[in-house]
Image (cartoon, rainbow, N blue to C red):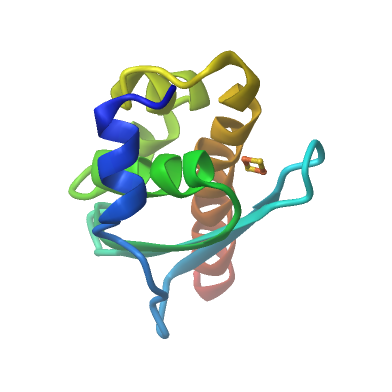
Length: 126
Ligand code: FES
């Protein structure tokens, strides 16, 4: 069974959407089921994440983990955000059923890819 937190973030996700002028975008697919998550970030001059949105084509656990990772990174610097692991996201949701743990693998990975994209874009501007 899903925890109340998982159900809440699945039923009422706070960060769903996309950011048209995002500073970084990361997409991650789940090889187990084929579901896809995309994360958009806005970052200020101090490398702090000021906005984050997600679009996930996946199950309830994938949507809940997407939403939770957004909540966890907003206001953090990119270095702090890079320290967030898939396990930490699942933990923040008070756990996932064992057969749904693979769903949580998307969240931090998609975020880390969005940060890598941001760094790449920034390096090109320098
Ligand atoms: Fe695909 Fe959960 S079943 S992410």
